[in-house]
Length: 176
Image (cartoon, rainbow, N blue to C red; front, top):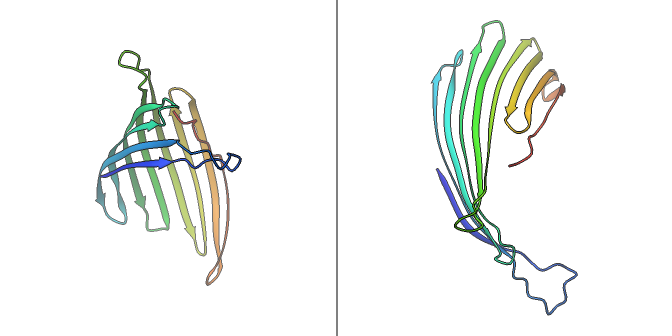
């Protein structure tokens, strides 16, 4: 677990006159809890993780921002290593993100989003060369699905010298 409680004061801008006093501040309270269990060996195994992050944010009263948020999630990853130099990894991840803007006692709009992902990756060693390929499918109830393939190769030319090449499609959902 972790917890942070702090205040950040904003400096004045370089264009502000010398007589101006900076008054902006942000108060953050953030925390998180997680529990991870591992199982297996070098040849076959994986892990499971459940977690929760949470926070409260109050910005300078002239700004008027006050919010709370949390993320609940679960991650399951597994691997199988074969004697012929092959490693297969797969996993599933899911999370619920939620935020509430605290405007008053009667009006507290809340936003929630659900995300899930599944992936598989294969890596094959062939002497000094390792080739890998993978596929990840992400789904977000606001942004929809995203399919992300990847492939790469790593070659050891000599001791201490390695050449890498990869191609992939990356993405990031807009924050809540």
